[in-house]
Length: 86
Image (cartoon, rainbow, N blue to C red; front, side):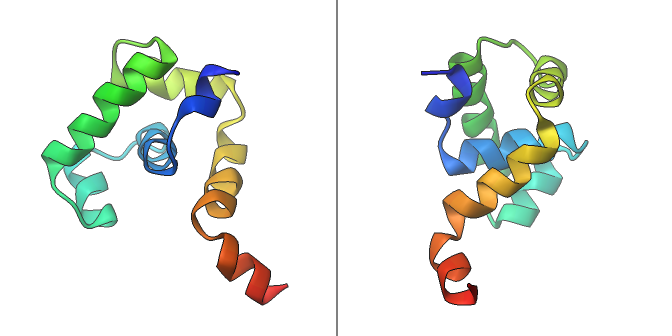
């Protein structure tokens, strides 16, 4: 299993938003949660991917098909909406 495949949908969302340049506070507001929860997601994501910083995380996402992460996230988080639309 690739490290990225171990991420939860929330961790994928946070990683993608970091890659897009949002701050923890901005991500928290967007996801409707606190900045501390975002920090917890980041810590877990760092551990799973073997990175040490937001910059390394953004570089990981970019080098592993960053644009594709958004589509994968939508399929993971909204599978019922996609089925109803199709």
